[in-house]
Amino acid sequence: MLSEMSLRIRTRLVVVCCFAAVLVSLTQSVFAQQLTFEDIKRLPVHAGGQRLSYGGDPFQFGELRLPKGKGPYPVVIVIHGGCWYSEYDLNHLGSFNAQITELGVATWSLEYRRVGNPGGGWPGTFADVAQGADYLRTLARTYPLDLKRVIVVGHSAGGQLALWLAARHRLPANSALYDKNPLLIHGVVSLAGVTDLKKFRPNCRDAVIKLLGGPPEQVADRYQQTSPLELLPLGVEQRLIIGAADGIVPAELGTSYQIAAQEKGDRVDLTNIAGAGHFDLIAPQSLAWPAIQKAIRSLLNLRER
Image (cartoon, rainbow, N blue to C red; front, side, top):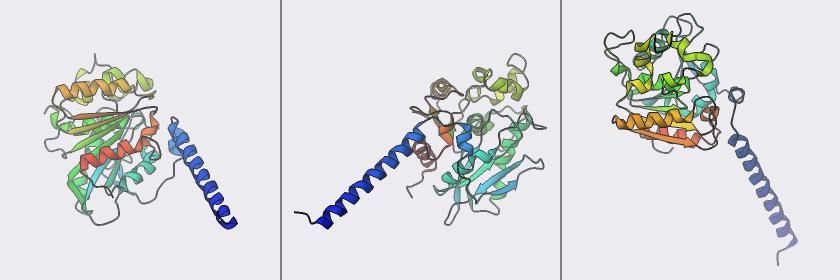
């Protein structure tokens, strides 16, 4: 028979274990809910990022984070969303970027001129993202960055820009955005990314029309030079992660894009997160994070830390 003291210890252990199980259950239930943009803004901001300008405009800068340990570090370019509007900046991705850096990679989170900023829209928004990405060559002179392993992660409108960044080599020589020597991108992780600008244009208060300066009937060449679907094949591996309950970027955009990309020879993996909303994909504590982490690791061939 157990002594009285043993019974008390066992009872206490059972209570502690039950409490821990309830706490985990509550935490999971909270993050199983669809998060809002306000929820994302309330996530803890982690210090450690260094803001560096890649151009002369106040919005032409990025935030560089370096992991612990010795380099050179593989690099993840991070591009925030917000329907390309000036009211949304990169600050809401602070927690997300810090968590990516924990994987042992450097993150270069880009700010850029957006619709509502002087010079934003066509072609400034795209030119900024391209210039910011290419600026890694300059940063690599000072920081231990491995430019042979660079991928892009973008959310929402940033997902469109991430895919576009990997497709720059397909732009015609007469394009305002053409560059004969763009930084080589080795893969893309698109989180609820806008893959088809023509289909998406009625959304976000006609954001696409404001971004490109008109509908396809008026500026067809701009859609052809910026919409990921129009630029296929990209020639790099792509990981699309979408939320089945996304109320901002329809999940079917990811599905139709994957089919079109694979038909043209691109390797595109699609992960559909059941119950996830639009903003769950940029919350490191959400149930979507393991899929995001897996996608980044696979593109960079990272081992478990």
